[in-house]
Length: 312
Image 1 (cartoon, helix red, strand yellow):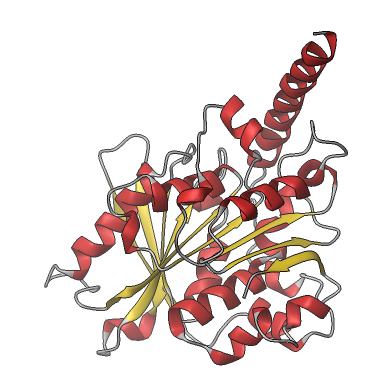
Image 2 (spheres, rainbow, N blue to C red; image 1 turned 120 degrees about the vertical axis):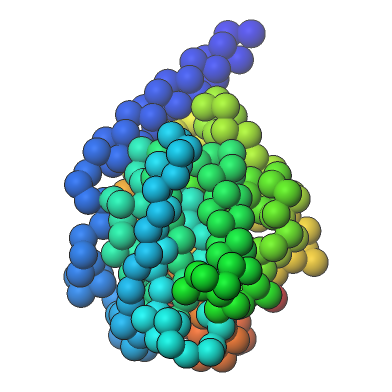
């Protein structure tokens, strides 16, 4: 009994400490610097270097305020060429971390759009349930069918992905598994998703076993993410392993940890491989495929990454 009480107390303390760190990181202005990609330390691995830098597309933005107090407003980043050409572009929906609306990490959206994606964000500071992501997707599909919209028939609706960091990782999972339009997504990426006990303690329930699309999950190796035992850390290795094992082996899945990286830096420091993941699955970029798959997959030999597990 005493042991059980001790474990419960440690778990509660872990939740409190994790919450404190979440809000500390949320207070940064902004969370991601405008030219963060110029400062990201990469190894001599060519593909991580390539996808960490900006792509070749000039980027424009479109904004819409809404009456929803929780969402606040939507902002969309897109290749400027979309306005005049007839091409369609894949879509990425972003789920925000705790207290971190899209306006705090706009550089990430801009970077993805420079690689040929339409990317939508909102100002939701509590995205865990996936509802705001579902509404973002709903808006984009509506704009794709509105002949007065610049996005009219410009969205490749067969190639839609979702990404989320921290609480947004929970939000991305729930957007795919618990929302009516969740079957619209082709792939998912998350960074530093809170481990299940922590998430449930915060009333952020999620069930990764319902994931049935390719999934790349990441976290950092430093203390706030990794912790030092099973009762600490926001996204420790055991959490990645448990979530990975909960997903069917019929689903392509990867987990990996970014070396010398902690919770608040996963957005910028892991961005190169997030970009590569979406480039492969949403744009059929064969070079990006080489980051993750094959005997010589770059991520396997990249010293920026460790604890890599791939089932394909």
